[in-house]
Length: 357
Image (cartoon, rainbow, N blue to C red):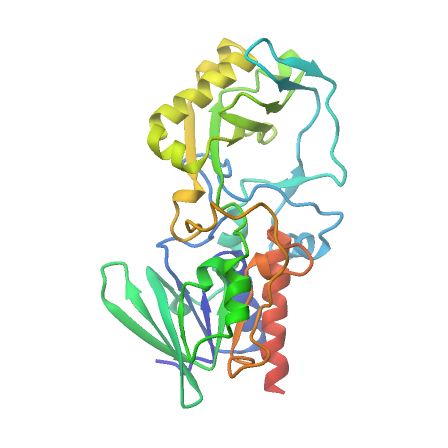
């Protein structure tokens, strides 16, 4: 096996972007991903181009991400907000109001946000990517890091490197066993950092055409009734017509209800709001991120929304120059956003490059 300088734990956007930067810098790396797929919290619905995870970016205030799309030849378009929006405060008819255009304007990726991790993955050497490996233990041994864990079938594995980039949420990173132990204050900060998207569930309904536009509606809805509390038009012009909603039902209640009933309730809400045409989607999807063990922990469901940015490394311990957090939550610019993932990854790789000089 090649001499590995850096192991990246996690194959979401930050991990893939870090790998591309290390590739450009000529630094040997290995990327380990616990899932059998890449992309992390970027996920596309099967058979259609609707996003079940990260959906938007804001090009006017996120120039580095905009430049990355340009570099990868990925096209984008402005998020659609034309038309009236609906407010559902009670089970009576929803109230209708003139819509508004968000500022700064949001944009989406043509063909779905999964084009971004796919394009990054295409630039990497296949032999440097390993999936289905869950890291459980990282230990310092005679100036080298020993990274241990298990395959999906329980078989153990072990890899060695000089530096580890943690491209997974701080909450999940805190669940890895480190030896010698990380400073208590650092672990506490990681455990108190909620994971972006961890509590959420999304429902997507795909239709043959955007019938709500014919009624002068934008597809934007806010509801106090639910089960969806926020609904958006996530269509792509002349290509795909869809609505998606954030489900406001708490995770434990979602588990009791079950996915099939929850889909029925979401569809019934769209019928109530938009009319009988909403009863006939040709595809429906539900993604509960709180049930994804590679995204969420039980502690994520208990923490209040929002957090301060935790330290990305242990500056006052033996881990100082060999372990760095690079997931979006560690970004000091856009924590929790796609732009934050590439910001934190770039900072982590730059730290490695500077230490080599």
